Length: 139
Image (cartoon, rainbow, N blue to C red; front, side, top):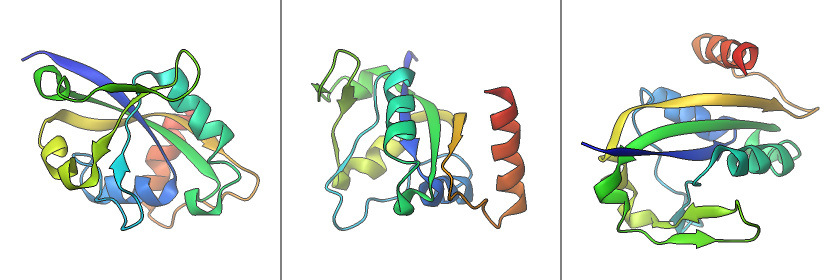
């Protein structure tokens, strides 16, 4: 089975839900979030994590870049959307299709980069705190 790697910048709350799910799926969208949008390259994910998340209370003043592999044949059904510059490519997955999308993830979701804003407060979960610190050391 051929896979492709996608990236998803997340804040602390979404990261906590990913961790609680065993790093195997992305949590359902909130009622006001009609799409799930993984991005096509790590540079764009880093840009979102650092430019938007670090000053955002809803993101916990933090940005985490996650990477995951997904079945290439499945993900080809979604059109790549360019939302700005040459690297700003993402997929728009309707919220109601996220569970099916999650079922085509191969392996675990990985955290690759960690960024903190000035008002960041670490999570209460000690295991997740250790994972964040280890990823920060490696990135």
